[in-house]
Image (cartoon, rainbow over all chains, first blue to last red):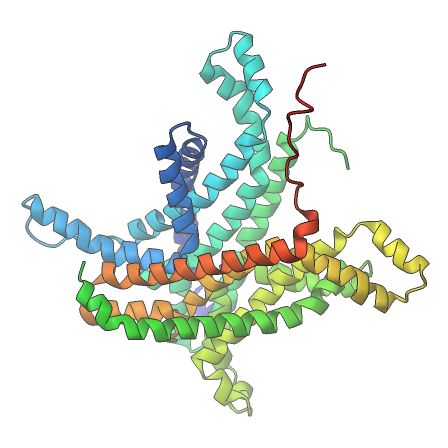
Length: 228
Length: 240
């Protein structure tokens, strides 16, 4: 089946998954920082967060990725030259891809986390403080568990879009699943077969994600009474 | 920043904007035409109507648009009957394949948006129409769709912006759209910051214009559902 290209395709799948998970880690950190910044009392911090989410969500991911990949190359080399480093620094497409996708989805998760934070009633936090808990304890015991519950639907959505966005890292030369499929398609002259296989693998990843995150949502909403 | 290089390349950016808008408008219009019946079928309570549409939107929404584009642009050439058919002059064109992909893609997403808006129709509206003796078709065209289309506006505006960004994929299959113009400038002069930042500014301008247009449309057609402007609180805030 697949003219012996299945192992190569699965290897590409691992790269795709690794890009997706690594960018997710960056995106979650940026999203938490961004959400905190958006709710900050300092106008300048709010302004920076606002600019970040607006600009990133207004430009195609492909353009941002090409900018970071090609532009980052020049910036890094200019910096290296200033530091007295001789020779040429190459930006790894993996690093550029992960950095770009993490940076983009950090902006989307900022909105998700911000929404989750503001749906928690301020009285709950005040009650925690009134009981003598420290701010860290209030965050860990009261804010965080509820924030996770409110954030899961938006998080699921963003993760699915993120997984699909990883397909474009092949454009900057990363040997991900799309790249493997393209190589196999070129060798066998059966592009439909291999892009279809890539599509099926993506469908499996998104389906498993939906099932898993759906189960998680039911788990963290156990204590929730629903009107309907 | 090499401003002279940007100014010199500006005409190709402007024609790139034209191609991007062309891809966007054609795909959105055709996609909407397909999505309307699909959305109605998806919201139907008859499984033989809703299940096939569910399968279609599931596949479209579960796979990257780049895979869909490659399947159509590179993939279809694998089959001899496609290469020998009368439609081959169309399918061998990158522009046509891009528009076709974007159309099928946006149709899937939009069908779900429309179905969701139909399901959210207050049941009383339908009951009232039925009690006035309207047949099902009239209920659909007079009551369900007009009210669902309004409610679909906010979600649809997101889809339109996603689609605008999605059209940048056309540059991967050799279409010189806005992203294509930037890639061309980068490979010619190797000025990546100038090339891609210029494209980003154009995309931002288009995104903001679309947001403004939808904001206006929502005000016009969705105004009756907007939260009421807060009435002066002075009288009510006095403790009794």
